[in-house]
Image (cartoon, rainbow, N blue to C red; front, side, top):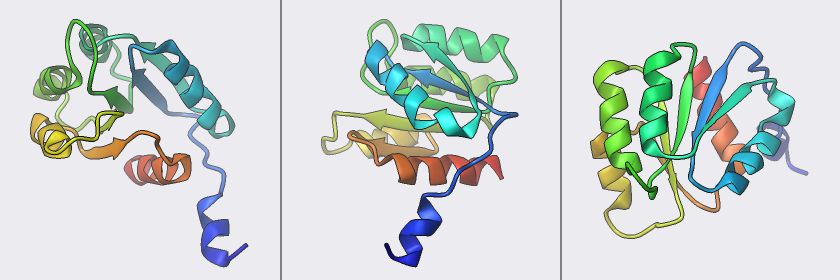
Length: 134
């Protein structure tokens, strides 16, 4: 194993942090619970964009949002716009399986801070999150 890889596989301590996973697929929520298990972070789930907006407005302890783009009721683009109107500094990472042309640009234009396409590299994701938590 090279030294660069060892650096990436470090454990993060996010015990004081809260991440909201916004995804209409419950299995994806459980996937992220597994990815972040060793970090100590608290994870909450919103199954659609409408619920995500509501939770962000009522829970100032949320430190970061993982936002799926394709969802019923309110898509990730519109949910992000609404959240950012009230919580401008809340980091939002767009994540989607629909990696078509223009999706990344539209995600960033709607207010997402970072865009990642599925399948997500969990070590890169954790590093990006940790950069926001510094």
